[in-house]
Image 1 (cartoon, rainbow, N blue to C red):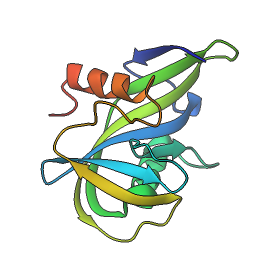
Image 2 (image 1 turned 120 degrees about the vertical axis):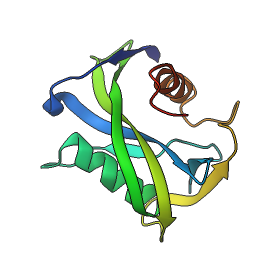
Image 3 (image 1 turned 45 degrees about the vertical axis):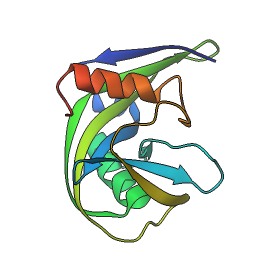
Image 4 (image 1 turned 135 degrees about the vertical axis):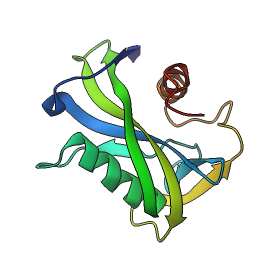
Length: 141
């Protein structure tokens, strides 16, 4: 059970275990629809050995959305605190995707929306909080 989502200006790169990317393309939000779920999610995923958090964000954006040409920048660091585990940290990024190619992952398709969904999130206790914090920081429009 998620107890709290926290936000930080920065953290040691080695602490960041995942990256999540708030992506837009042509003025629309880019969300992913996983093959095994009916909900929508923000592109992102876990860090692989030898990657920096920035490299994780770029790889996950390419794999989950098919992004070919894009700009990517960090917004902040966030953490998830669960009742039964220690705090885990990730990087929150913003991206503007210029061109798309094929999706090479567990993602069935991408969905472009004028506004983020009001419900139907894969991780409803985390994803809306990330979006709101990025807006608060001026990290996205």
